[in-house]
Image 1: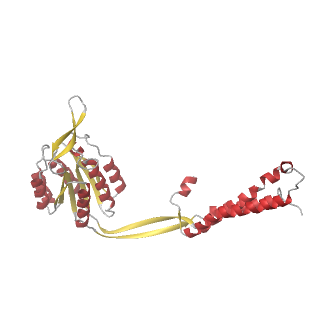
Image 2: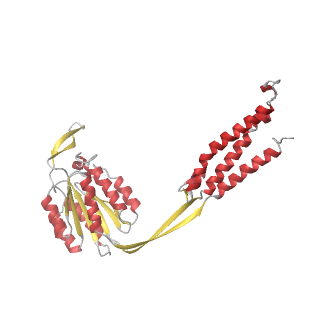
Image 3: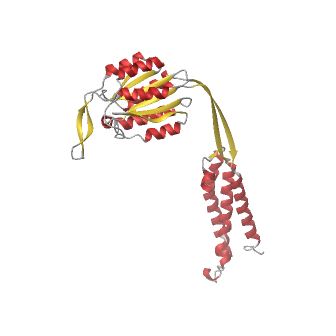
Length: 334
């Protein structure tokens, strides 16, 4: 319960917190003052240990109560509180499906740490940059699968991207199957703008549907496709499973059917991009983000809740405790 209270706490007058730096100085000054008073009162003919009763030993407690009370008072003056932000999106968003290749070659390490993890990272950033749009996720290798249907719950989309692993489907590169599964997600969409972002690192070598047939379907449905070829030039270190079950790194040739990906993009009104490293892939998603801007307005309301009351009450409690002890237990007589 206490941990929940301190969640999302922020200070709206933080300059008061600088006064906390004076508390050690105040403690030192009070202690020196008390030591001087005791040295004056000490009788030179009586050893020091004989007259130090429990009241004298516990009297510094008053000093601590005063410092704690001041600390809580300073925190209360700094106006701790929590803000709750609500937003309302107006206008028409875009329906976007991310179609991601998860074949074994996506584990090649010409990206950091590999192509698949790099693609997942930039995809999560892209999702975060589209607050007004519905997004979905399709993965494919030798077959395709809808990982997440179109939704405005971007946290769920991000979690599904994080859960993607290579090897969850039959290996291969069925580009046509991945496209058709993505088109089926967008087919029933009522939004005016529908976009498919297809990312792959290879050539089509499987599936029951030819990519060119899927391209014609996209043209009929009015779905714009952006294609991304992932892979450096030449060869790339790739983990390959051996017959004995072990995994060994081998240098594999990077083969991307750029002619096919260019044709799919240009025929559907999109663009083809080639990513050769992490930075290039990030820039591609940023370019697509700029090209596909939805016409929206976001209205934000911030509600502030003061939470200084517990600190003010604690300051009052320790101050009253100090006064009570001074006039009862530690009362001094002239």
